[in-house]
Length: 356
Image (cartoon, rainbow, N blue to C red; front, side, top):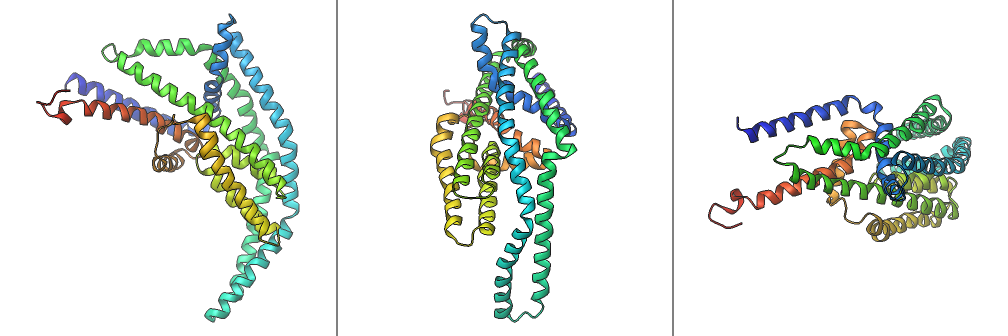
């Protein structure tokens, strides 16, 4: 085995081992991933504070405290509203079930008369009963997510572990990068530094820009859906906006949920079309204004590859995989583009006689 083949084998084994470690530890990684994302978002602020001759440890603490105050204020403003809306949803479940039954039964009756199905009445009762149980289960689940013990444990882990991880990453980032730089192979150090800088630029720009996009969309959807008269406009709007950090999830999930609630709540089609128009406007705002201005083309991935990355990440790592799918795919994209550039410049592609 040549030296180049030995290095390649070593890197492949290291990547496989790292992937296996992440897979087996996926259930405890969420606070650490969140802390890493917070550190990426706050790093420019810490760098500006250090340029004002503030020590990096103090600058990191100031940035974390400012972020914590902003997050705490947002939670204090939104959690009471969310809890009220979820409680209201649970109270209105019987009327929603009756509305679903009133929508389903005429359609089932029409199908029965047209195709001459005699036993479809039992199917109607079954569907109505299942819908009732499903809505009751969803309502209870939503209420338990806000007040249940498991939710409290998860929130506490995010509240305490995430700031610590972010603080230590911000404080020691120059030391960490310096140590990694020292470990790079001497013969390939320059090339690897260039690619690592490109990955860093891609991930940092995506994290900061996408966070602003999600916040803007959450405010837009919450305000417009509430103004449109949707009962749980704040709840659905915040979900649709914040879930937009995972591409396509916020728009499709929030849109389907809003339209479904509108069909149950409103007796006419006008408000339903208005709700649908709000999400169309949100997609236009995201695609043509927010994302180009705040994120740009930092990820550099085709939408088909983004969908593929989301499916693979979700299948392997669940919710954590959905969060990491696009950033990891973007980092892989940087390396793939570099490999293609090297291939196009190689004699294997050009032939032995063609100049570079």
